[in-house]
Image 1 (cartoon, rainbow, N blue to C red):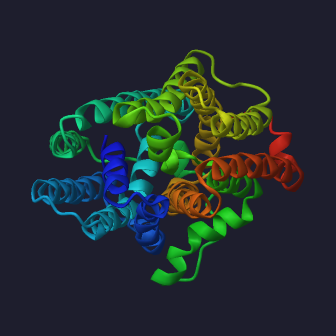
Image 2 (cartoon, rainbow, N blue to C red):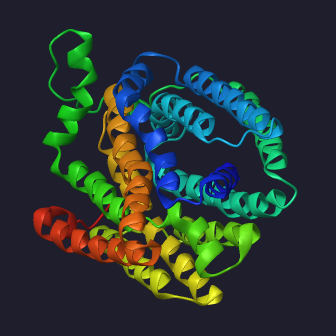
Length: 383
């Protein structure tokens, strides 16, 4: 809901594709600077408390957006400032949230937990943009007010969690070689682990470059306003469509988990993501565009599912927060930095050409990673 409101409000104030890209950049840069610190904190503090503090700050940020809107301001720099604060807090909550889930369930049930967690998340992805688009018809202040209430509820629910505990088998897992004492060395321990684990490196870097080039999310307000002519409610549908596909795929994976040929499924999912990005860029029909985004979400969820299981189950709990920070940095790079890349290329070539170019580059990344990481292509079982 927040993404729909911010995206439409920024474009309404500026009518500049680059302004949409700057929204992503203003969130990504603080996140990039602080995420390694966030991973270190996740490994040395109660992860539940980290989440509560971070989301409380974000609730205050939404309150600032609400005040900004009610005041009738016509400049966008306060929005960028608030989004930058969001990026700073995400640098702390993202590693803690990723590292917390494996400690809540037995190791053998973790793949099921991933699919259930993804299903619940995608339900929010589906309903959020749709509600955001509809509520935006009543004004952005309504959207921000509802989001503020939901964030407060999130803080209360998170505070009700018990303290996390590593599973016994994870506590006994082999950890990387001990780094020299010192905070600086400890901050980089997760990076060293990823660089020495080719399987983990290949998985998270595939997502980085594929979504970096192929993400069209930042340009959806332009497609809704100028290409498909469907307004803010239609923008909500466009943002919802990938989530519907992802949620249905996650639900199917809950019933029938991937047991064999995991590498093929992962590369296939990213390839489908790229192909559907191209179809969306070429489409001038609302229903075809929605269908392309729906299938795009299906492919994306296949990749997310495989990546989520591989990274977490191949990482000892002692450094899971720092490895999760690296993973979050790669995901952030693919999303927020990808939004900036989309805004820049849209200004250079136009929104349609930018999306088409992104889809082609995504397919090129898939082909390159198949050659660079043959162990991923041959990956069979996830456990």
